[in-house]
Amino acid sequence: MLTEIEKKITKSVEDLSKSVVIVRVNKPPMRLPFGGIAPQRGEGSGFILDSIGNIVTNYHVIMGAENVDVVLSDGRTFSGKVVGGDKATDVALIKIDGTNLPVAKLGDSEKLKVGQFALAVGNALGMEGAPTVSTGVVSAYGRPLPGADLIFEGLIQTDAAINPGNSGGPLADLDGNVIGMNTAVIQFAQGVGFAIPINHIKWVIEQMLEKGRVVRPVLGVLITSISPPITARFNLGVKEGALVTNIAKDSPAQKAGLKEMDVIQKIGAYDVRSSKDLVIALARLQINKETTVRIYRAGKQIDVKLKLIEAPT
Image (cartoon, rainbow, N blue to C red; front, side):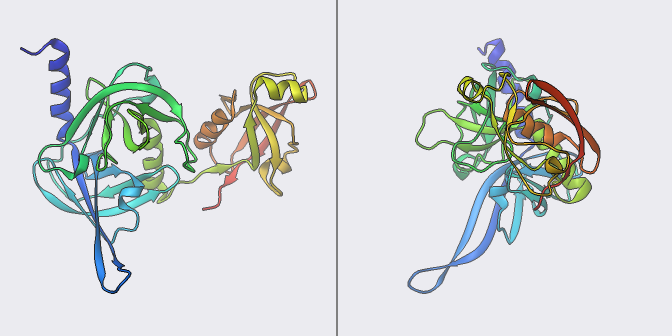
């Protein structure tokens, strides 16, 4: 006899699994050291975003692919077209032409609480049959990925088992709402996996569909978060913010008069308590639109106006 929580989990997994797909890729053949070539193939996971066939997966799953095949939970196989990919956030969008497509329910990653249950669903180890399911909790939120050069740092950490082949699959809550996309696991650790928050994925996909690429604003500063030792050493007078350590030539920051040792406390409508806050805020702002930046300098708050420019590709 199933308990009420088990009934809830099994129902959510049953519904969510219908929208989870296998992503199979063929890459250019690899030359062998002693002659000859060998085909390169890979597999990952993905989930269906809408009824017209948009599917999200990890960029590293489709990177360098010559062709992509998508296998649905009901066994149907489609040729997939890569609409776009963003290496910095490891998000990619695939399009298939199909009918009666089961669509995943998307949640709100801003409402996550550390300790809540999480379900990881995906094509673990490429095993035949239905997707593999593992359970765990949201271990932390807002994590950087150790050793990676990701622009976005706000990853979900979970102890739900994530294995090769899970990449691109959904991380969901107990109601079956997708709260993130499984992207990486720390091999030398136990129960330390990471997922990209679904709210950030929504933003990346919206950019790809509207503009064909991800457009990011750039301020033109190097920053570091303020800590008690930094506050004491430089006599900053504030305990929170993003400390400017360098300014790029001809950048919006330089043109607006920002200086090294300024502390950025707010940009647009977003408060900046740490360097991470500034990175996340920039992702939400528009280029070529006047933006107010509040800085703390020599005991005074100063508001300056500037226009952000597009970051180089």
